[in-house]
Amino acid sequence: MNITEVLQLIDERLIERDKKPLNTIQKAIFEGSWQGQSYQEIGNEYHRSETHIREEGAKLWKLLSDAFGEEIRKSNFRSTIERMKIKSSPNSLNVVNSNNNHFCHTQTFTLPNDNDKNRYINSQSESIYHDLTLAPQIIDFYDRENELATISNWVFKQNTRLIAVLGLWGIGKTTLVKRFIDLNLEQFEVVIWKSLKFPKSLDLWLNDLLNTCQKEPKESTDNKIQQLLEVLSNHKCLIVLDDFQNLFAVGQMAGNYQPEYSSYQHFLKLIAEIQHQSHFILISQEKSAEMNYLNQENSPIQCLELSGFEAIDFLENKGLQDGERWLELIQLYEGNPFYLTDIAVLIKDVFDGKVNDFLAENSLVITKKMQSHLKQIFGRCSPLAQQIALELSKVDQPLSRE
Image (cartoon, rainbow, N blue to C red; front, side):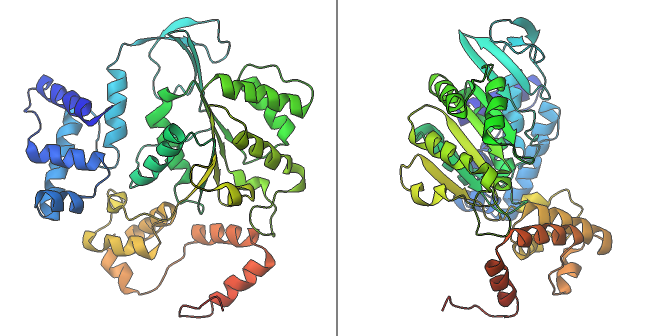
C-alpha cells in the first residue's frame, strides 16, 4: 500500500463513521509517521513545536482508534491499517487445511484470522505456502524504519540471497525480521520460519525443510541440497533461521561452528553463491566467518548489525512519569528494548513511576534478568575476550587499542 491508498482508506472509514476527513496537520503527522519521522522532525518540517505535534498526534490516534474499532498508536498504526486493508479485500480465499498440506487439494474457507499462521493458498495458478508457526506475533513496532528499508533494498533490488541480522539479545532482531515479513508476505511464494534454539545436524534440518516444502528427501545430504536449490530457483522463497548463534562453539572466537554443525557453513556458501531467486535471513547474536569476506557492495551476502534505538514512544503505556527525561533513560540502557522493559517495571514498582527519582540515584541498575542474560553473553566469549572485558571494566575513561 502506498500513502495515497492509505489516506483514501482512512478518509473513507471516517466518512462512514460520520466524521470529517483528515485535516492538513493530521495528514502531515500521519505521512511523517508513516515515513518513520519523529514528532520533532515532523514539527521542524511544518514549523510547529514538538509539543504541538505530539498533542495533535494523540488526537489523531484517538480519532483513528474510534474509526477502526481498536487501539491505534504511533507505534502500531502502520501494521493495524495494513491489516484493516487486508480484511477489507474480498473475503474468500482457497486455503488448504494445514493438517493435510498438499498443493493440489484445496477447499474454500473464509479469510483466516491473524492466528492462522500455516496456510497454503492457490491463487491465479500460483502455489503459496507460509509456515510461521515459530515466528512471534508483533503487536508494537518502534523506530526501525531505516533498517526495514535496508532489508527491503537488499531483497527486492539487490537480490541478496543471504542476509544476517545481528545484535545482542533483546535488541529487536527477531521483531525486525517478523515486521519485514508482515509487510511483504504477499511478495513471496514460500515463507518458512525455523528456529535453531535446539539445533539439528544439517542433514536432519534439510529433511524438515524439504518435508515442509512437500518434497520427499533423497538419501544423501548433497542430493537434498540439490532438491532445495531447485525449490529456491523455481519459487521465490524466504527462509528465516532464528537463534543461529546456537550453531557456534562456546568459549571460542565468535562465529566458529561447532564440529557437528560445520556443514552449515558449506551449505550457506552454496546458498549465497549459486544463482536463484530466493532469500535466507539468519538471526544471530554472533557473526559467522563466511559473512566477513562477502559482506561487500552488491554482494550475495549482507549483514545488518542492530544497535539500540531512541524511540521515546516505546516507554508510553508503561506507567512512567517525567517524559522529558525518557530519552536519557533510553540512552542509559543503550536503547535495548528488553532492558528498558525490565527497568520500566522496576521504576514503576520502586519509584512510583518517577523517572526523575530513579535517575537521581546516579547509578546504572542491573536487574536480575539483565544479569542472567549478560552472564550468558559473557560465557560465550573466548577466554581472551573475557579477560579484555574484565580489564576494561576496571577503567573509567576511554582507552586506545595500543
